[in-house]
Length: 105
Image (tube, rainbow, N blue to C red; front, top):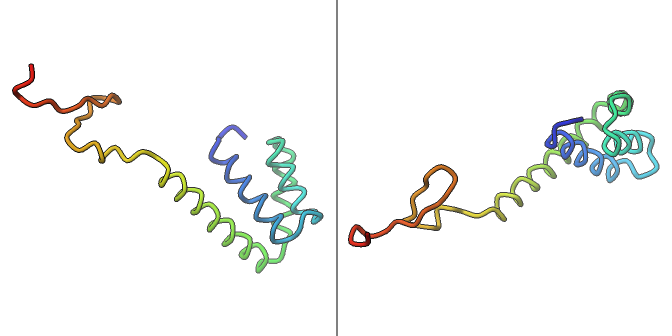
């Protein structure tokens, strides 16, 4: 699994499945293994195990995992720098330069 976002999402799902079903549950173990190894065979096994759960359980896990993912996104946004706080600064490319008075040369 090459995409870092997908890897992180699988980690959130693995944690959620473990909380909802218990650490010893076969589905929790398969999803955790897929997260840790990233191998396609483990991903396939985890998908099959998860899809074998009853619909109500999959929906419950889905809702909890989505809530957890939203919290992760909100935490990231709250810790990132808000560049609008620089006020009069102007942006050139990715470098921020201060806005000088017209009198300064």
